[in-house]
Image (cartoon, rainbow over all chains, first blue to last red; front, side, top):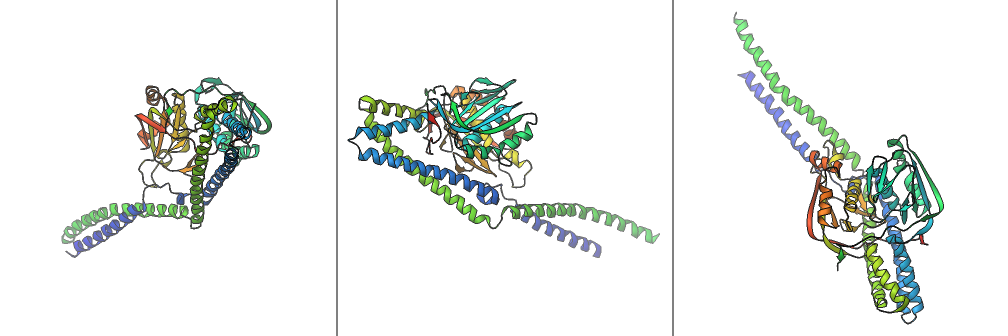
Length: 225
Length: 248
């Protein structure tokens, strides 16, 4: 009788403790969260730098457009200034829409050896994020709607087969783009580990010439207001 | 003889007792260990001095939203001037009409039409789940989906309202995703305008987006593609600033 009572007490205590632990455990295991507070200091610093860069280029453009607007409004009679304003905007849009050949300084990435479409897509994404204004692969312009797919012998870009050596050229700030690509733990060092037999060279260029991209069509998309 | 009859049930009782205690003890040990691991991870993540950095990031993002609004406002005002010019004859009129066409081509104007809506979201999982990496969305999933869209002939794509243009990127720092330099968190709604049949047939192709599809099957990643009669894709609101590239 005494023995069985001891057993009951022992089991009750274990069960009690178990219950407490189970609850604490359940509370501690909240759902995976994406909040910024979960990032470490180094990631947060990188994020802040990225957003600051975007904000300063937004500020630059606001200033430029404000000047244009002032000029256009102040000189509504003078067609000369309006015409200059129109030409400026026309040029800027020509670059953005990739409808004209362009020239400028930038960075060339040379890739010799096995490489694939997803890596090429990631590289283009990285270069665009570093602020590139125009990109070319093996002498062809990468269109705003460019797509990448695989092929046994190389990488297909917008339906055109490209093979090694790949020459990826980007017009933009040579320093910003080359630092973004070659920083420690950056995309080029990751590629170096994944594609051990492939040689990657990143070089700044004083002048890069790129052709226009093929014209884009709008058949389904209509202007919305 | 008497001693042995007492001893036998007693021995059986201890054996049963220890078995009854063994299983809870095992569970207890597991829970203590698990608890300790979870707590150490959490304290490493929630570093105290991160708070000012998080505040700074949020403040900058808010500033960016304001700047984008200002920029959009200026563009609208300049558009009005150009549209007035477009009715003119001569060089100014020609330029204004070409500018309007280029604004559409470069993704500055909002468009609508038939298409698909792609939904991508993290699996509903506890923070210490196995294969967490496979269960959550990454920036490369977004670039892969956008790539499939362009390949299937999409004419306009936006990720959570950010129009994908020639300078657009989907970037990732830690587990935070940025599209066009704007902080974003899941779920992602990727709106695509294009011939619906063409879009659907490529998204349905099992060879396309094989990695995302297998993670959606095995790891609970949420990935859905649905037809939409009328998809609206907003215009790009970021900066265009061509400072290095000059038309030849």
